[in-house]
Amino acid sequence: MSENFAPEVETRLRADAQEIIARYPHPRSAIQPMLHLIQSEDGFVSPRGIALVADVLSLTRAEVSAVATFYSQYRRHPNGEYHVGVCTNALCAVMGGDDIWNTLTEKLGVGSDETTDDGKITLEALECNAGCDYAPVVMINWEYFDNQTPASALQLVEDLQAGRDVHPTRGAEKVHTFKETERVLAGFEDGHVNEGPGAGPATLAGLRQARENNWTSPQATTSNGGETK
Image (cartoon, rainbow, N blue to C red):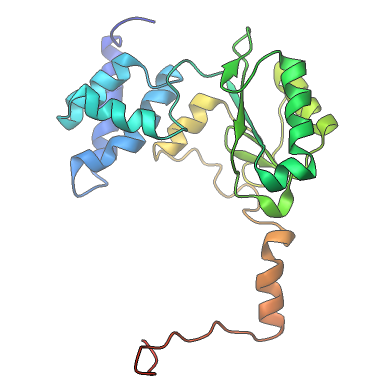
């Protein structure tokens, strides 16, 4: 990878960066979406990307790197075209997440945060996908694949390797590439936001029951017994 962006690419990135900065009262608050912007171009937070963000925000490279190394969604080496995350936290693990993980590592020949030789898939063991009501869950470029089994997860990665579309349980109609997804995370809409449901029946079961029974949340009280407003 070139040490510097091509002039036309840098011009485009700087224009996008100014659009991001305009959303915030303080320019340095734009650092996280700007790092996603860099990933949408390079597929990871590259050294040249860190330099660009630092220059635009009048920060040091060390300050930018401190943010990039703190959050796990920022990759420090080139990511695959598809990021496949398998939840191996407690609930998903006992529901089959560990079996899914073992199946995929054997199939792909890589471990966590490693990428297949063809650059197609980066595999990662995730702590939690916040989808416990559909455990075990797999995420591909942050799209949900609920109630997975080793066989269904294996089919997903085989489809990705073959260049076939895969369709999330919730969210966008199909999974888009890592770089395309990163541009959305930078705050640039891709037109797919309302394609699919954001929550399924299991997630909404409690809300549905509360409405059917006319339940309301308890009122908070102050130390002297009065209700807060």
